[in-house]
Amino acid sequence: MDLPRPLSHSSISMYSECPLKYKLKYVDKIPEKPKRFFSFGQSVHLALEFFYGGKTPPAPSLEELLQSLKANWVSVGYRDKAEEAEYFRQGKDILTRYHRKHAGDFALPLKVEYEFEMTVDGVPVTGKVDRVDRLEDGRLSVLDYKTGKALAVDRIETDAQLTMYQLACEACLAAEVGRLTFYHLPLLKPHSVGRRPESQVDALRRKIVETAAAIVAERFEPKPSENSCRWCDYKPYCPIFAKPAAAAAAPSPDGDLAALIDRYGDMMASAAEAEREAAQVKAAILAILRSKGYVRAFGARYEIQRSGTEKTEFPESNKKKVIRLLKDAGLYERVQAPSGPLIQKLLADPGTDPELRAVLRGLGSRVEPCDLKVTPL
Ligand code: SF4
Image (cartoon, rainbow, N blue to C red; front, top):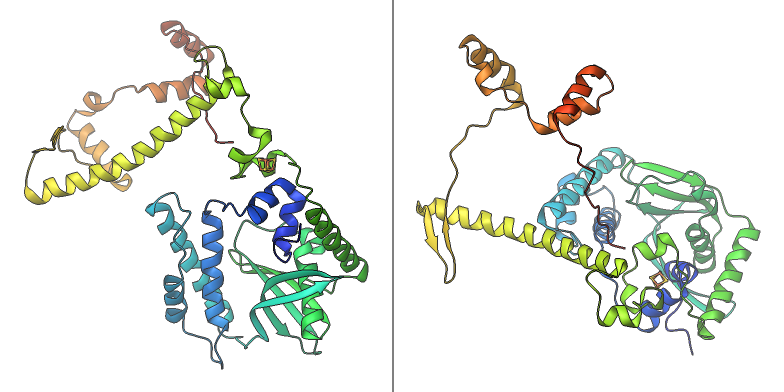
């Protein structure tokens, strides 16, 4: 077969991680599920593209930058609106701090979101560099923004993405690269190194050629590993995760542990989803009941009634005042009741008098731990 599309840093990484995953994504073109970290990263990158993408200085104002985040916000992949709102808040925070730090030293870059196309020993390769600046000595400074967790310090020395960008910028922009940078946006911390040695660039060239040859030869064996498979969307298509025929046809409710685990996991996932949806619908119903002054209303199959008693919630800052008032009124004992979780805490605390613990344990009965933590594979 021919290459389905030019190689890129991410497609080469995916092939190395698992050739079958590469095939399912790039040859069979089965899309992966949207992921919140991709959406978040893309949104912040687009805002920074706007920041540096003007024709002349000065830098756009903070308001314009935040407006650009809003206009370019990629809204897919979030668990719910609350999670999306939290990520949007984080995006605004990062860009506000970025603006404070860099609006003063703003200079137009040589390239922003620079899309390159090149051939490496006959293999077509594409990619996009976040930013290219011109150093004082005329060489290029290549920069890639990261929005995820903090970077491992030694990664910058060996990461193939920066080596790829050096190779591409030198081939396409006809100038030598002098500096390579990963810029970690949440900490506003640039991690820079000098130009990669030729040996590292040659190793990448060989990797590009070998990967292309393996794809053309249709070598797409699965390569399972805990890290890759955990987040892989292609399990339903993967022979490693195919259920044995008998179990898939008729999972036994009491004999097959794997089938029971999967059934339990599915049920818990559906229950959690249903609980989230129910909370949203409940809030909508309560809002309507409140606005109309109803305490009871009817659907076609259900009746609903507002129940419960009105209560007063006390902020933490008023807790001591409330206790003092109750003590002064001689009512404190009436509201103090031992709670189960607090007693468990006392029993687990090695500082609690051992005799007291023994007596308390004697008054109760031992219950074995019976929680099951369910995690999607
Ligand atoms: S589940 Fe694992 S082995 Fe299967 S395609 Fe995904 S990464 Fe590869």
